[in-house]
Image (cartoon, rainbow, N blue to C red):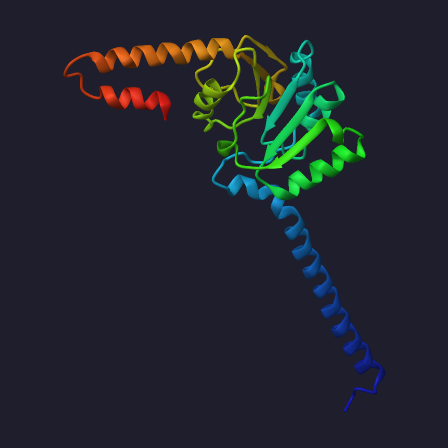
Length: 226
C-alpha cells in the first residue's frame, strides 16, 4: 500500500480537500438560492407583481408628486418597503401590502431600524383580498397586465384620493400629471376623474341593456363590474 508514501498522502489530502471545497461551495449556493428565492418568487405567483426594487429617482418622483398631500398612503406590492418608509419620513401614515412574507418581515425590520415603525404598517396579503377604501394616497409599481385593478380602485377609493403609478401607466385612465423620465416616470391620477369615467361606462352599458333584442347587452354590463 502507498498510503504511507509522501506522494500517496499528498494525493489523498488533495482528494479530501477537493471534496470539502465542493461541499462548501455547493452548500453556499443552496443557501444563497434559499435566501434569494423569496425575493424573486413573487414573479411566479398568481398575482403578477414581481419584486423589482424602486430606484432612488422613482422614490423621489413619488414624493415629489405627493408633496402637497397628506394623510394615509398605501403601497400596493410594497416589496422591501422603501416607498412606505420614505413616505413615513415625509409625514404620511403609510402602509404596505405584499404577498411575500420575507419582504414584509424585512420591511418591518427596516422601518424599525430607521425609526419610523410607529408610522408604518406592513401586511402579508393578496391585493385582491384587501379594501383600499381607507387610503387617500395609493402607490403601485405595476405591470402591464394589471388592467382589472382600475375597476377595483375606482369602486373602493374615496373621491379625494390620488393614485400614483410607477413604471407602467394605467391602460385607460388619463393622468393629470407625470414626473420623471423613462423607467423612473410616475403617473398621477385623480380619483374623481376615473370614478366619473366608470359612472359613464355604467350608464352607457345600462342604456345598451335597455335596448330590446340587443345581443351581448348583459355581458357588456357585467364587464363593468367584473
